Image (tube, rainbow, N blue to C red; front, side, top):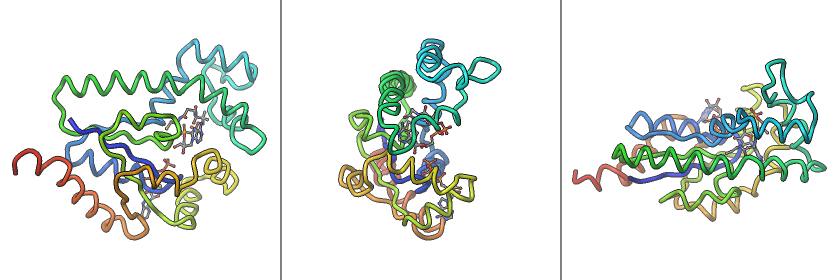
Length: 202
Ligand SMILES: CC(C)(COP(=O)(O)OP(=O)(O)OC[C@H]1O[C@@H](n2cnc3c(N)ncnc32)[C@H](O)[C@@H]1O)[C@@H](O)C(=O)NCCC(=O)NCCS
Ligand SMILES: Nc1ncnc2c1ncn2[C@@H]1O[C@H](COP(=O)(O)OP(=O)(O)OP(=O)(O)O)[C@@H](O)[C@H]1O
């Protein structure tokens, strides 16, 4: 089984690449979705309530993510972000490991780990290869706007991550998503062929 990690800037196209790899037979693990599951853990909810108060919980007692986001993204919020990362990242890794083991047991050929913070969180060792999805700042900003993010939200999340050049140097290959989606999907197909098909004896 090959595990492919996807990294890149905010709104660079990681989900687009992941979706194509899934169409080609890969199984997707999402760092964001696994993080959301961790926020439903009662121990995590209690730690969050103790730090920021009941106002970050909704009427069902679940974590209200936009409220937590306001506490952790921003230049002056490093300590709060560190708190959240230390609370969630080990639990996310544990879940990812369990899912990887289940896929290995089912003899899956390819698993895709779509996780913006894969490198920052120290999950590189879960992957055989890491692909960096590249797109210019302006395109990413425009794509983020079209999914409802303000420019401030975009900048604050970007600043909370490694600089893109640093991410790129830790990747095994780069996918250029500065053009049409068709051009990107073509690159994904080629990489998939290298990763899986040829090794399966075709
Ligand atoms: C802060 C939270 C509550 C905001 O939730 P929200 O629904 O608005 O965002 P979502 O989880 O979908 O993440 C969207 C993007 O934000 C960025 N992001 C999320 N968490 C972080 C972080 N701790 N540091 C830097 N960037 C982050 C990533 O680019 C991610 O792809 C949530 O992201 C969270 O619990 N983060 C900590 C866990 C984590 O690191 N998750 C990402 C794993 S890849
Ligand atoms: N080549 C492209 N041309 C036009 N739109 C694109 C292209 N690639 C991605 N998009 C659009 O840009 C947005 C962001 O893409 P996507 O969700 O794949 O990025 P992401 O890296 O997974 O984002 P994040 O991790 O920040 O959630 C989506 O709305 C997607 O449809």
